[in-house]
Image (tube, rainbow, N blue to C red; front, top):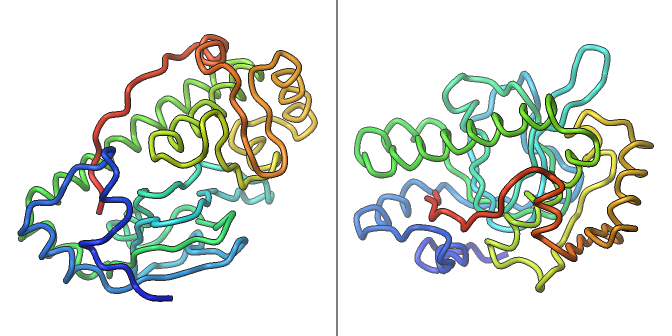
Length: 243
């Protein structure tokens, strides 16, 4: 597969991402070490293992998860195009969670050893890394509030709305429909619910004509009503950095 140049990156054409200055683009062309394509089900990173590389998702979707000693799994979040993957290992030396592709994925590859050059030579890009980390912290705080204070129906509504909104902001999907290459077990493991409870909750949302998830596709019938049920607001997307 032919490698995509930074100048012609399809994600950079999207209004969601801030544009590079000329010197930033020149730096990123040297910072990028290559590209990687992985199949559905493949692991990019394994909990407890060092990773010499960090990635930006170009195409496809995946998830981050942590496994407990008893074998139970907690999905931390869902990975979409534009997401930075592996920063934790880049700074802490080893991964504290695993990263798995749930569809075929294409990723930009950066060497962990080059990260310090970015901090030294490109303060604006270093700020972008800080922004990405802060956004992740905000999302994890919202997730904790969801797991602690929302009931099962509100949790599922919140999660589906987040995934739908993020994909819509990226221009992925058609109108009320977006791709959803996950299993119900993935959603259950993200929300602290049993598979049976998750299935029943999805059926409830479907019967209320709010959301339907079938055959790898999510259909949101009424965004505002789903947001009201989830006790959250619909917001205009903030312009964000992309490495």
